[in-house]
Length: 124
Image (cartoon, rainbow, N blue to C red):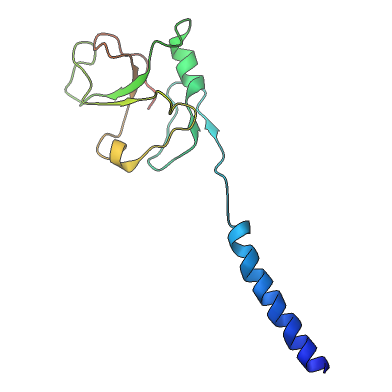
C-alpha cells in the first residue's frame, strides 16, 4: 500500500509541476525609460518609453515632434525629408524596435515634426 501511495504522490507532483509551468513562465516585459537624447537602443527591444527624450527635445512644445526620421548618409537633413519616418503617436510609451521598421536603417534617428528643415537632436 505504501508503494502505491508513493507512486500516486509522485505522479500528482509531476502533474502539478507541468500545470504550474505555463503560469510561472509568463513574464511581463519591464518598461525601459529612454530619458535622454542620444540613447542607444537595439533592434528587438520592446517596452521602451520615449517620453523622457521627447520632453527633453520638445521643451515647451510637447506636441512638436511626433515622428522619428532616418536620413541616408548623403542626405542633407535640413533640406530633405527623411528616407524613413516612423510615427510615435500612441507608441511612445511602449515602443517596439521592430526588425521590419529598422533593419537597414541603423544609426542615428532624429525626432521629426514633418518639416524637413526642422529635425531635432539625435535619438539613435
